[in-house]
Image (cartoon, rainbow, N blue to C red):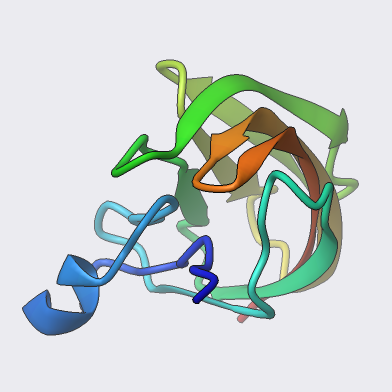
Length: 130
């Protein structure tokens, strides 16, 4: 069976966290919910993920777990109404401009190896700041 790059947030239950294979975004004290399709590295996936958050922003962490290994994580497109801050090697944090509410978008590009082979995934984030 194929596994997915999971997107988890801070208030996720322990059972769901235990199933996280690769990506498990956390959001410090912020409210942040990321939803979207399964994605893999070996198939060079391009997916669109929806990130809903409050004014504090949203963190995306792509921690290595199991047989997954990350070699590169880069920003392909910066957001228009905020900024992406890299924290360490595997985390990007989106911070909306002060007072901004509405939609924004940004793209992260991840290369590495998953259970089935090597490749790169393009993650298009559609952010909604409430």
